[in-house]
Amino acid sequence: MTPERDGAAPSRRSRTRLAACCAGLTAAALLLSGCGGGSSDSASANAAAAESATPSENMDDMAGMEMGDPSATPADKIPDAEVVEGTFKLLDTRPPGMDDVKGAAWLAQSPKGTTVTVSLTGLKPGEEYMSHLHGRPCSAKGGGEHFQFDKGGPTTPPNEVHLMFTADKSGMGKMTVNNDRKTGEKAVAVVVHPMAAQDNRIACADFDF
Ligand SMILES: [Cu+2]
Image (cartoon, rainbow, N blue to C red):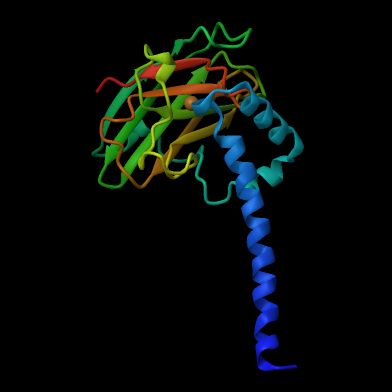
């Protein structure tokens, strides 16, 4: 065997590993990209991707994409942070059975970055939900597009702020997520969606900047 061939084998293996990794990322991106684009094709692709992946596969796909830590300090309890708050209001795009959803969201900014907390009641027990920071007020198409730190960049964390959570037996859901960067006053709203149908915006909260 020549030295060149010895060198070629490991590089083939790493290419294979890279391809597998990217396929996983694509699936995760599909799953996450939901509410911004808004075509029904993407909604059914999201639903299909969610159904075809087991929970543990989803976790693998999303490694490195922070979407919430239930034990993190909530945004309204961060010391020395500037905190704004918003109250969730129901949107006309909500799915049936979501008329009792209520809650609040907090956005805290400090030298360490941004912390967002959402807290809701009236959700369907055991169902999964997704919240994002959005770039427009709730009155403008229910929050408009997702807020992005780098506009036109990746539609996944950490370039966007996503919170994924499951409602408990009483229909309550609460989640906190941290991001190293500060949103300034550009992330003006937070929207909550059913995980499996992210085009259906349930409720939106405007922050009181
Ligand atoms: Cu959203």
